[in-house]
Length: 231
Image 1 (cartoon, rainbow, N blue to C red):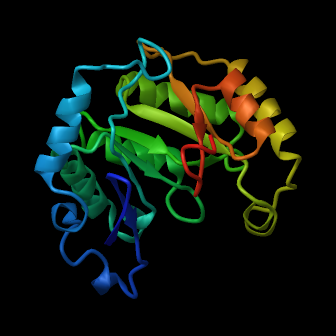
Image 2: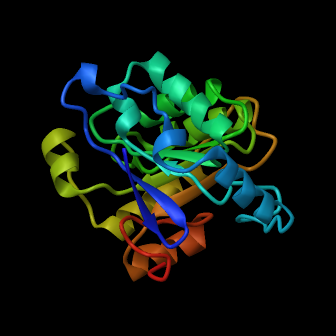
Image 3: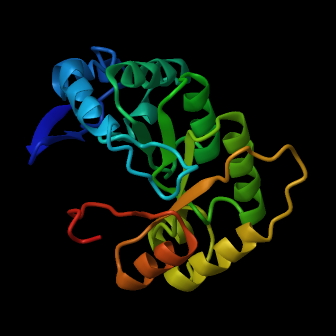
């Protein structure tokens, strides 16, 4: 990790390990690389009194600082779980991870959720071409029931090379495909114990049409490589 500071907030830039032996030699010591626990605590304390609702009053608290990383895929599951627990101890509010050709998103979320007790685990994002709407709706409900207010489902349409060349699907029009997928999720049957709080989803959105869909059909948007002013 190497730290880069934009305004007052740290952003982690991750380098892929050259080999398994090079990966995380210091056990994800973010205390040394990113931001001190005391600084996180001060930021959390400064924002705790406001308690501004996120999405709705019954929803989850993401906190002022989170981590977005793909690096946990390059560690054994046991080490990834240790890293998640350490991030929680350091005071971060959420761990976001992508889905490409590594760990499957919902299984990965379950691994990290089971290793922690407070921090939000979020898919950033889960590929809609990887699972049908009924499957992802059932997975979301399962995790939301087991870990109330701690699983955030981020969904995205990915891109043509990954969807067609790697997964073997036909890539549809992004907004229409996402809208149809959300329709399928919303009408999916679920015959198990439901979560006590309605699950939350966000959409990977950059352009105006997908941002509009996120506003209409989800709890928010998950942008990528853009400043807050964009969204």
